[in-house]
Length: 364
Image (cartoon, rainbow, N blue to C red; front, side, top):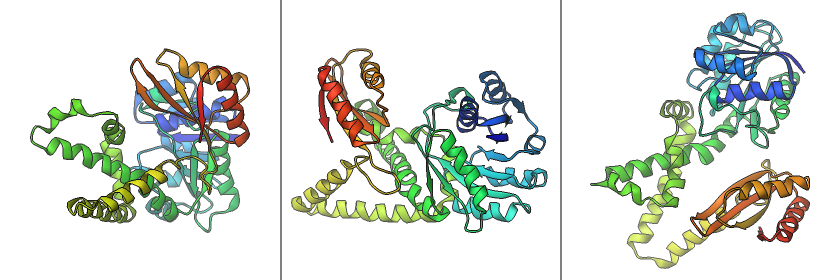
């Protein structure tokens, strides 16, 4: 248990960490800092923190762990302002989406006997601010930590225990590995979504086409609705990796353009089939640091409460659902839901329980 944890920024992520720390009794005292009075009020009233304050310098004094839950563009400036107030032995971590620049500069800023360990909880919500905070936000989510080579093991363990303590799956990577990975699976998809939306609205009368956008367009472009200022800072602090991924993606577009212009049906089909094969593997039984996932797809009628009923059947049997996704829904016809489990045994048991309850189930 931590004696004191200070969270700088009690928005969605910081507030959720506070709620999770207190719900699991991981800290004797949680202090929240924010420049937004409403966030501080909600943090105090919801029980996310024991104490809420505007004074970051006072709040970090004596803390074993300081969490910088600020926008990535503000992390280093906040750290620079606080460095003279940090106590020897303190470990500082962040929650930002880019790591190489932040970790390298943070190491230069840190005073003696104070260590920085980068952190990135891969969790989020369509909600923002303390009002959207959720104590269960990190359960079964991946929480990447990015220590530097000279970071003492006890400092790494402090951040690892935070991540594991709030229910996340801890993954350790170098800052460079992290930035390359998120550039591929998060930052590039966001830019693609932005480009798709802007391509549509740049067409003559393009905005009139928006109501015609089917599920595919909506799903592919959903992330483009994210916070523009936050994403600007992400791209500016991960420029080399993002630029590299854009170059790779541009070559893919060039290849698609060439085979379509040439009317090369065989190559078009080969590219489509390759993408289809790979996509169907996500996240089913993917090995490596992401671990294995065992999936079933359940057909459901179009009736209120069906997801709750399925979850209840499995919960009553002690089966934990690691991930859930609504795949297809047609009004009046129902649809299908993907459920993922940590073990093959849970997959088999879930499939049997739901089949006995009359559901159509396919294992993947």
